[in-house]
Image (cartoon, rainbow, N blue to C red):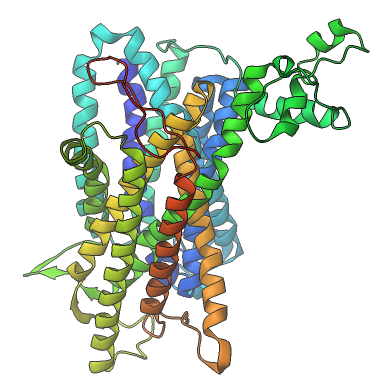
Length: 533
């Protein structure tokens, strides 16, 4: 079996597991009987941490482990995590721990809770490791075995197309949660086993770690702090002299009163001018980085509150009952293809312009439109609930709201476009602004920004809930979805996203954007975009 296929099976298992985890919110609100805010907090913290951790994982890969060992250890963590998730469902360990085997809250004991939260931690490690190393390690195999990969590439592409169909259509029709989580667990274990056997047979080619560029950032801070009391020399040729952050220039000062050989040997006390300037470039990106977080807050409501709304809505198309993960299928479809459409349209409308600043504006405008659409649809859903007397419907009731689930499709499509455009444009922004040495971390920074917003959504729900209680009024977030006022929360996100868009434009005007080369490889004749005053 080709090394390419052994690695591709990990991608297959990841896709199937993603569709199984997509319905985590309904699982927590029905089987565990958690209120919607607590269930959403668990899902968002898990998702956010899994997308922030790759930045630290990349440091470990570059400094110590290499892609192969990161992929191996994260795949093992992934396998144990999904297996623990399947075992945490009530029927699996009911006889061993003395609990009942029904999918009811009173059947969730301490053992199931420990397994569940352990599973989330291990799965987060697995997802982070795969985000960090799976693509780069796969590219290494393509480069070293390019002639023998054509049949296996076809098989890999077929699996990537087939598995979303299986995940969104076949898997949801399996009723027992233990089996629904168990099938991805088995697939993940088999995929990890196949990948591990490849290492035993030595079919992989991989490079050794070369050191992390994050190290020089730490070195600049340490070196400048150690020379805090020293003055900058009057001769600017001795140190970097770009505007701002002059305190970091001290990291490049050579202290003549001490042994110079010791300073050359101690890389933590003396940095080069290039390292100091690269560190300044990274720090200058932080204000812009902060404006991207709001996109993550909006994206976080997709697999939590949007999905919970769809749970009790009419899912039938004729006599066919459509599964919930079909919404994820359309979401991913728009996420993957909208950015390509945007690039084609923008190149025709704005030829020669630098695209990422406009792409981020488009993503923020789409997030505002998504929140407005979601608020309108939720208002209609609540009106439908009141008119049919379903306002006090308990969580375990089988009554379905007489409103089609596909009313939610526009907001899922808009949210997919937001996710795709924000990741693409943020990645391009970092490519344009970050030092060349940080190229490996660009896409990981994009994931990390969205992950920070996903975790931050938990805080936003808490703050909005507390503010809505002022004056003795009931909180917008109640124990059940039908008693809550998510439409008000969506309007709040609309206002916050609009303010964030204005802040982004003001911050973006402070940056200078390097014009990329023309398509024929020639150098651009002018610098387009915003310029720094």
